[in-house]
Image (cartoon, rainbow, N blue to C red; front, side, top):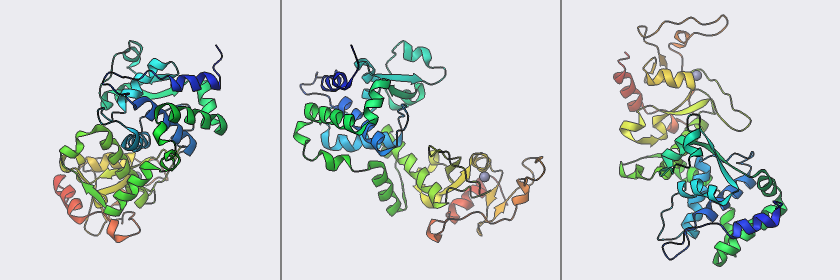
Length: 318
Ligand SMILES: [Zn+2]
């Protein structure tokens, strides 16, 4: 059978969904709509679908409107079970090839993210979704079959960039501190974490606060991390003034107390932690002692003195 547009229109209308609870589980069509939206936005550019904060927040956006009350809004379910429909495949992470091949059920989002690198579609389907005309046929097929009562409102919903909106709301609040209960939902935690990191990095102009390095790949991967000054695992403090943009090396070094930052935002290098040998023409870490860090444009986003003080005390940096 040729896998053309009508083949996939039929596939999308006949998704193998769970009907056990007397109503259709809408997870699969919602996940497909989310993937298609990110593809149109340019967020997905290759046939590799990651369980990213963008995908999760888009899925949750649709779930809020199109989801059902009797099912859990768990993106891990369709991300795994769509493999049963023949056009959705999983690419395992190294070491998980046999887990995926043996179709071991991965129940939680964390387990799935550990085992699966990304999902990918049949190449024919990916190409059809890349083309705007066939894409709109496939969207219509999903909406008409699974969400016919939403046909009129769908376009408006489709245009909302959920992850962007979430970041805007968080930004206006200056970040947030969470309770343990807040973190029970794995999917929301992935979204919050990604939003915190993205905003912190952008406040520092994508540059490392220590060495000012700025490297961004063509697909927007960043060598600079949004780091926590007081560790998130202990304090759950995602306020932006508990953040610092640091490159991988200096993030690692900061988390081990190889340097601190004083109340004037200057770097302090304790002299009893490490030895170093830098290649010619590159600055050694110790050379940064006393230097002002790269700060955000607005003083309200500067790292909080209380957090910096906590970090110096924690690592015994005078
Ligand atoms: Zn750096």
